[in-house]
Image 1: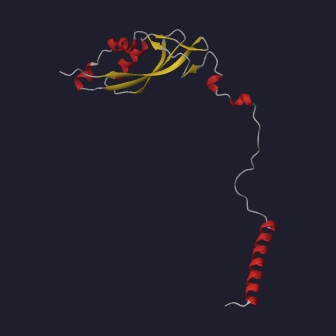
Image 2: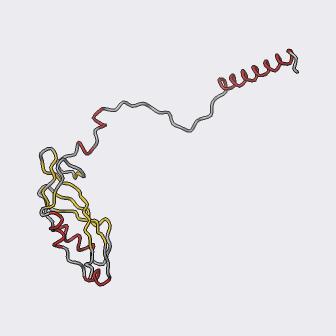
Image 3: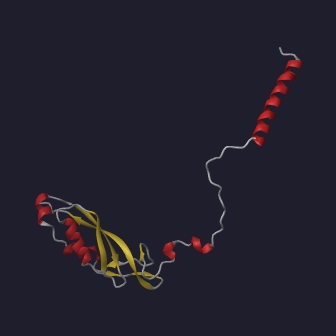
Length: 159
């Protein structure tokens, strides 16, 4: 067993060691953390309004109060599709995803294939979508441009 004198010396040594570390921490310069100082900036509340809520009439929307609708529905597009001969002979089936903008008059513009299957199907999907007619999208009572994506499915009839 340790005597009281030894216990006191151990306690004193521990306190001195702790005091030394504390003093060194306070006196010695601290290494740079590598992080820059951060200034707090108070923003104008108007800066926090999302861009899609402050767009002008010339902007293109992704979502509006009333989305454009295809005149005649999807059947109108399906009737217009002509299966490309190359794709038919090769037995190619699948979906072509076409992205486009419906303008304020309901016409289609800026048609792009975002995922295609080739063999003439991509070009046929673009042709059919480009000729489609939509009712325009409405935002705050006004017709606006809306970006949309439409899948055009190519499926061979089973014989």
